[in-house]
Length: 440
Image 1 (tube, helix red, strand yellow):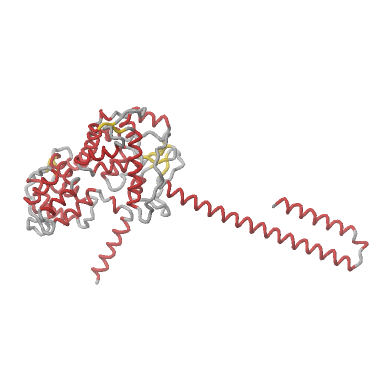
Image 2 (cartoon, rainbow, N blue to C red):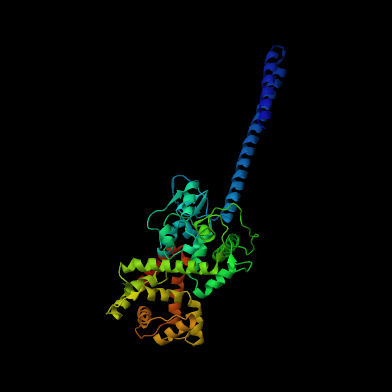
């Protein structure tokens, strides 16, 4: 285009020089014709230049539209955007134009490591994401070099050496991918009776062992199912799943399948890992309140139960405990652990209450304890059942509202993850609404 313009201008200059040279021989009529030709040439040049400007503008707009389409596609394919890694990169607020599920937002909020353009959690990040509502300090994406990751993986113990201190001992020396984060969250809410079902889901060929490929395929299925559940309006169809050959090894993959990825996972090791993970997270919560002693107070137990729930006025529940339990006996870790194992069987407990026909009315302590045992095989101590009733028995009639209790405990079981997105805006809206109603 520009070459044509340059040729056109050269021709005009030659034409102008020629007419100037012949002007002494031309009469006034011919001179007038020469000036008209030059005006015509100038007009043509303006048209050409204007055309170029229009062409450049349209081309620019087309590139912008194509760029936006590419960005939209990337947002769908990779909801956790890659980063250009430096030594440390401060984590920006989530892009409002990129639709992310509640779990994706939380993973991004707590993740602190970047490797080859992908975000990862450390074991310590995962602990924080489970125990706290917000990171303790501002997170930075720390860029890992290959030699750093190799060192982490070489220090990762095999699954048969696992313990209930695995995540605490690894601390920041490991990486956890987003799909593994979802898998670990699922473990925390699984009842022990469901461990075998979970293992059989991974064991695609039914040989009583899970290899690396089987594990990664089911992880991807789980991620897609979770994302469809949390995002409204997404289509149910999905592309055929496959496992990339050159995928980054993570701490969990090396822990399960060895440094070469050739080991296989049996049910006994899988069960021990799931049980250890549940125990470790509960120990961390318990020790945060026990402050070096073997028990926690009934008030602290109430605080732990009501965290991550929709309860607005937690202080009223705490006041209820203080007034109802003057002689503090405390709750041991075994009682604490047994209660949360019961929560992982909450749906079976609900069915048991319906069988007893208690679902439509309040229940007493004996009925509550019997329903727990029928549903889970767990025996809650009389002391623990009494404390639970003191927490939730707002009208002091020694009866428990089944619907209110199960509603709050479902929220606590999932640590409020379903309401994470837009949580602050919703809380502020509720506060504003209450203020307006009280003013009328």
